[in-house]
Length: 114
Image (cartoon, rainbow, N blue to C red; front, side):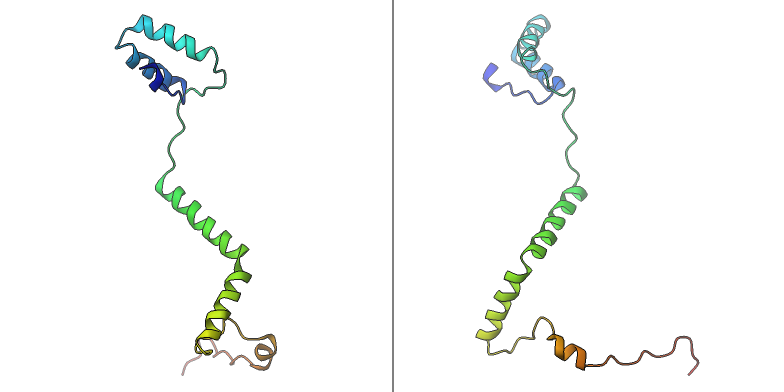
C-alpha cells in the first residue's frame, strides 16, 4: 500500500495515508508525518485542472506560433507542390512588382442615394 502513495499536495497525502492505514487515524498521522517531514515544498491542495477553453486556447496559440515560425518552410513546400502540378495552383501571394502595378478599384461612396 505504501508504494502507491504519490503525494501531489498535503490534502492528497493525508487522504492516501488514511487509505493506506485502512482508516486508522493515529497510524495515518504517523505515516503522514513520516512523509511530510522530507517534503517541505508540498502545496496545501492540488492545483485546479485546466478548463477546456484554456486548453483549446493553448493548443490554438501553439499552432499559430508554429505556423509563424515555419512559414518559409511551408511556403517552399507549397511552391514545390505547385511546381509538381504544373502551376495549376494559385500562388500564395502576388510578386511585389505585380502588386504595385495592379491599382485598387475605387470604393463606392457611402450613404449616397442611388
